[in-house]
Length: 271
Image (cartoon, rainbow, N blue to C red; front, side, top):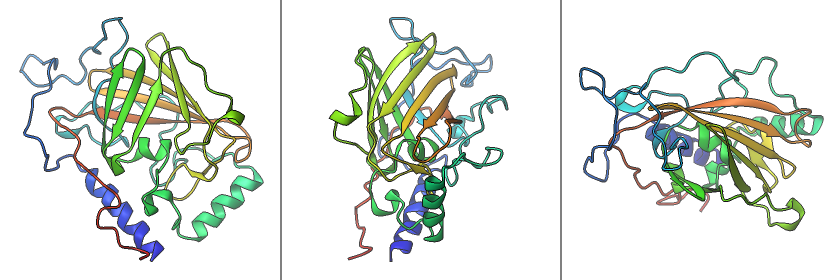
């Protein structure tokens, strides 16, 4: 039954990743969209700015490197870190992940079990990297002291503090599925550091590990009106012999809002 639950959960994620969905709100035009000479949305247009001159990351975005909704954001250039995969975060990393013996054995065990214990299969938080790479929409709210991200998938959310605070000492905090996140601006890039994870995390469907020793550094760059790049560096001395970096591409979705997606609704597997 666990395997069936996992398969159903993955089908649900893929179903919501399509470009067009029946919305719960009537269409509302996105304000301030740059236009081409022919009047079409210009996804290669200038990056909007906040009142203090920082790039504004706000908006409804679609992750996973797929098409940019019906508006079709321009394809990203081939340069930069390897693009992360939803099923396998290392699918574009030459030579695979730099796993320690512990990390390799853990991944082997998860794959041998058909990844049945992936948290998403049990309606548990799927973790930062799976949230980045799955295709359902997510909505960014950029405020002066924090960045809040609401995810349509399983109705999850993250809060990133940009008020100058530092990460709390890992030994003094209760570990969380998404850890504790703080951000700072480095020019036009928002650098986010996250630590304090629960042990037993999954970076992807197959089970690439993230342990309680892990630290995740994300670099958010809105490179045009309709496209954002997130470079993610994983440091985890228990699971990996060295840090590694992958990229996640995000495309803006115009005139869209999130729909409600409650993982446990009508879920009867394992009862």
